[in-house]
Amino acid sequence: MSLAFGKTRTAQLPPNVNRILLVKNLPFKITPDEMYDLFGKYGAIRQIRIGNTQKTRGSAFVVYEDIYDAKEACEHLQGFNVTGRYLVLLYYQTNYRSKKTDLGKEEERVEQLRRKVHFVYEGFLCCSVSNRYIRSDDVGSTKTCLTKTTKTN
Image (cartoon, rainbow, N blue to C red; front, side, top):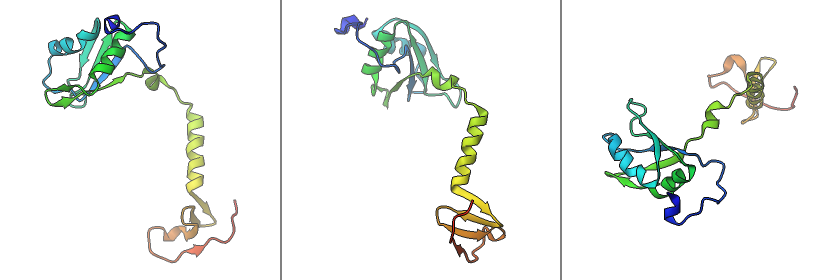
């Protein structure tokens, strides 16, 4: 259907373009028929899923048959006013959900960050932001701090 808008289908699409659109800021009372009327103008729709729980109200997924139709809908309906609410359209990114992280590497990264921020040295807690040693039993109180003189690991 994008040929009707004067666009060619030979154009290179960015990698984030997807045939699944995430629609946010929908009116809570919108019906499936209204959704099909609104999004069906841009091409054949395979499926529309409207959020119905407290967390997902006001959002929906629209799945087009063709990626170019989804691109046209996203370009034309971004910021479109529907009963006083402006639509926010995003391409659904499946790779963010399926990305697996190595637990060992993640724990090592967290430990390195902890060492950057704080380290314990002979009963003293050093905050690298203030560069002062605080007695570990004095943490949380307003006792005097010793100035950091040398850096030792």
